[in-house]
Amino acid sequence: MNVHRLEDMVRGWFGGDFEPTVYRTSDVEVAVKTYAAGDAEERHVHKVATELTAVVSGRVRMDGVEAPSDVQRELLALQSHTVHHLALIAVLLRAQGRLPPAGFGVSPSTLRHWQELHSVAP
Image 1: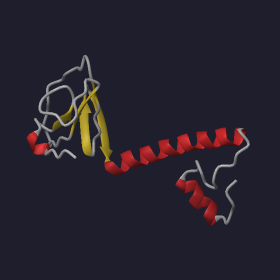
Image 2: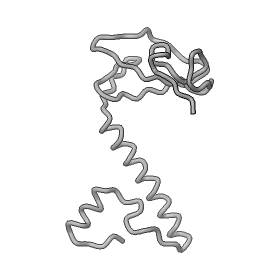
Image 3: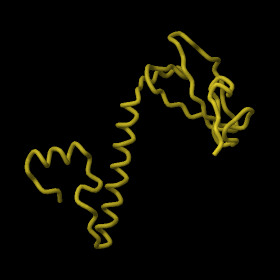
């Protein structure tokens, strides 16, 4: 196991085609960054790699677009998207004559609603 310290990276960047790096790749650039209100970086465009940005808390304006976010919002979006994929898998299983487990591919809020109604999941 290799141990790296974020403090040893340049401005939080730890994945990409640069030094120092934890993971060298020309596909993406990854960083953990903290900004104070009013901080700014110059506009830039990546010609080779894709920069992925996840706003953990607060809001950011990038290329003229404001994106508010927080960890809870991002996790809820991930959960919803995962349930969507599980629902598609359930459809495919049923098309093959196989029954998925009860509640598989059903959102947690729907499962709670069913429980409140004392219903049985289809």
